[in-house]
Length: 83
Image (cartoon, rainbow, N blue to C red):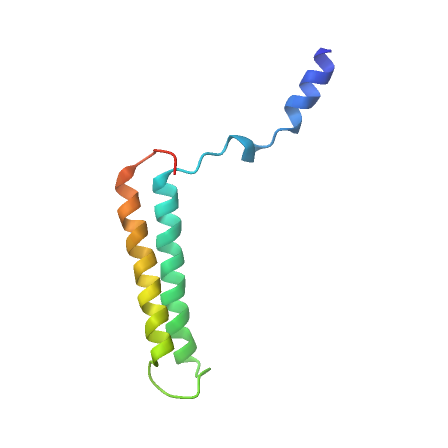
């Protein structure tokens, strides 16, 4: 039986014991917000849109990215508590 138990123990992966903390979630949200903001400016830089300058859709995307990043900033001080 001990052979069966050790095989069963080996089947559990590292994801089974992973606990996402509020700090980790905050860092991920900050990174996501930054990617959204930088990506929105990159669209304008490479001239993908019809018009020059920042349009209304891009303003909404930038505001959303900043909002997501700000939510992430508020989660970081909460530390290692599970999310």
